[in-house]
Image 1 (cartoon, rainbow, N blue to C red):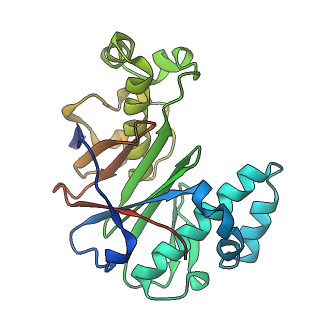
Image 2 (cartoon, rainbow, N blue to C red; image 1 turned 135 degrees about the vertical axis):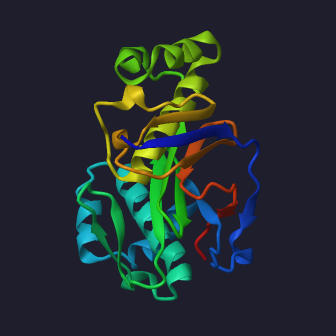
Amino acid sequence: MSLITLNNKNIGPVNWENKAWCDHDLGDHIHVWQVDINEHLPHIDKLRDVLTADEITRANKYLRSTNRDKFITSRGSLRYILSGYLKCPPSDIRFKLTGSDKPEIDSPTTPKIHFNLSDSADRVLIAIGASPVGIDVELINPKFSYHAILNNNFSAHEAAYINFDDNFKRFFLLWTRKEAILKATGIGLTDHLKLIPSLDGEHVIDGTLLSTANNWQLNSFEISGDYIATIATNMLKNNLRFWSYYVE
């Protein structure tokens, strides 16, 4: 058994910087990009133009135009953002899936960068780093019936925290933390979700639960009061920078 540490915390208000100021040099930073889907609908053709034939086929399988446009916007924006780091045209980037179906860059192979994408409602977040990252964003939906999944996915202490006060926001806070660490480690959904701690503070757990020997930092933040997000990284310094993306 290998013990690891998960450090969960809120990082307060986030300053979203203009993409024009980004030099795409990660160094020892993690970059988080925000994409507003509605703002990009007038540019949907430009975003579609950089997709592969397979991606366009996937987009066309969505029966609802809103879902189709979300896929095109998120995938096209991902390509444009990654192209700044990879120094290549966005249409040249190729992706592959790991054994646990986590997307990663197949080519170009240098520089070696990791990414993760999450979307909810009209918001897309993309995390990029030199080491594995995971990100999850959720719209704070007061109509979501979460009580049915509490017992199977949250510890007794977590369930008590959620039910104490402002429960919808608390539920989505803890949920994004569990999702982000699962995506960072690449293991996907697990039957042991209840055993993955998501309350504030430092937690020591068995690393085999997450198939990792690394310690992890989980930073949570709100977006416009309507969304909650968490980014998970094994870079233990809080070297996060936040960027707003818009297509030109």
